[in-house]
Image (cartoon, rainbow, N blue to C red):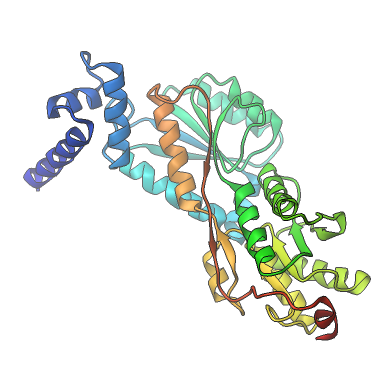
Length: 351
C-alpha cells in the first residue's frame, strides 16, 4: 500500500511538473516552501497543485480554519438545505487539502466578539470563513482580525474582506430574460428582503426588464416575511384576491417561494404553466420533484464552498492580494413550470 501511495504521489508531481514546465524537484521544493524557487514559479506550482487537488504544502497543511455560520445559515440548513450543500463542498475540499474545519455559530448579539477573540488568540487557526453574514459588526471585526478571512455567500460593500458568492444578479437576469423571450411582460418578483445577495437578484430582475424596454413596476415586487413555501402561497393568493391577476409569470428569489407560489396558484384554480409560469432560483434537488417540476436557475452551491476554501488557502499562502470578490456563474435549468405567455384576458378568464 505504501509503495502504491508513493507511486501515486510521484504521478501527481509528474503531472504538476509537466503542466508548469519545470522539474519534479522544483515542484517538490515549491510545495515544501523551500528556498531557491522564484516567486512566480512557486505561485504557478501552488495554483496548479490546487487545480489537481494535491495536498497542501507543510506550511499550511494541518492548519485549522474557523467556519463562522450565522443564525440565518443554520435556519436554512434545517429548512431548505442550501447551506447543507455549501458545507458539503467545503468539507470535501478541506479533506482533499488537509485542512481542519472548526464550526462556530453566531446566534446572539455579541457572539461576533467572542469568535473573533478566539480566532485571534489561537495560533492554530490560520484563517476564517464567514458563512451567510451581512452584519456590519461582524464584518468590521473580521477586517481588523489580522488573519485571512473570506466571506461565503455574502460580500463586503467596502471590500475590506474577500468574498465568494454566486453571481446572483446574472442568475436573476437569466431567469427573467427566459420568461421575457417566451412573451411574458408582466413578471412578478417574489422575495424575502434583508440580505445583499437577494438584493442582487432583485437587481437582476430589474436589469432584464429594462434591457427589453419593460417597466419594473413597484406593484410587481412581492415581499414575504420568510422563505417558507406556505408563506409564499399565502402572499400570492392574497395579492390576486386584492388586486386581481396582473401578471403572467412569477420569478422568485428562491426555490422554496416558487414552490409556495405554485401551491397558491393551483389552490385558486390556475394551472402552472398553462395559465401562469413560475420560475425559481437555486435548483435545490427537491425542485425536480414538484408538480410540475420547477424550472429554475442552478446555483453552484458545493462549488461555492470549495472555491471559498481555495481562496482562503491562497490568502494563507500569501498568493491572493489584493482583496477580491469572486462570483460563480449560474445556469438555467428548464423543467415543466414555464411556458409561452397566453393573452392576458385569456389568463384572467381561464380559472
